[in-house]
Image 1 (cartoon, rainbow, N blue to C red):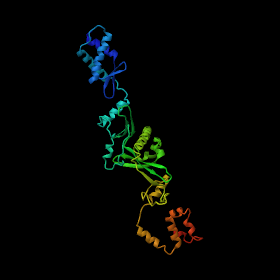
Image 2: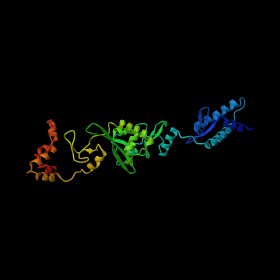
Image 3: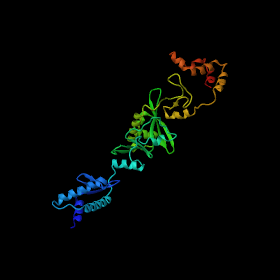
Image 4: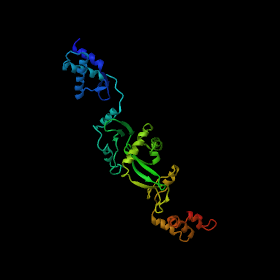
Length: 332
């Protein structure tokens, strides 16, 4: 049998052909050999060593025969069943799919900040090991050792709101097609991926329950990395005077954002909005100049800070005489 044929028979006994997602390779004794560059030279040297072990005392095959056998082995590896994609292969495929040869220094943040309607505050960062790509957010380690999808579109914590009781709500912003969507989510919900999907899934949150744990961790990492740049705002739970005894909320965002504690209060909140002018209000109040009870009711309703500083409670209902006289007018 010609030496080249014996070498090929030996190689088929010693090497296991495999096909990864991106390249064919061989395994021998736990060592991996690819067919390009330095790996190919290692393979040729290993073939010579295998020949000497099997055919001691015989001259090693010529370089031409070694190269021909390496080509035959490559063909066998290319015909092998593909390996199940591992974390390293998935990470590499993700980068290649988006034309990224390596994880960029800003971890893809520039894709978001270049938009005119970008909701992220200045100096926002993407923490390791997360990567922003065109199709969402992924967990991709620089060494390719880990991969997982976090969200199917861009999803970021952008601000924190604190209500009068000290409870926190996190403003989450996500990309829905060509627009941004934002929602205030209770912090306890953002700490549980499944609760988050149940709370905001109908609003288009780009997370599915199977990957909810990764989204939960990704949001926590983003908030921890950007705690100093995410603005904290006060949020009202109801209209009218607030707990600071200085702020009077007449409608949503006037002057504070209002987030009802209960969902069934949202319709009532939507019914309140700025309307008319201060001058028209003064004219309406002037019409009550001859009705003392109505005046007391109106003024007392606007001045609870005065009563709280005196450590006294006051209800304008007590200003009316017995009976119904004045109460209907005051209510109007």
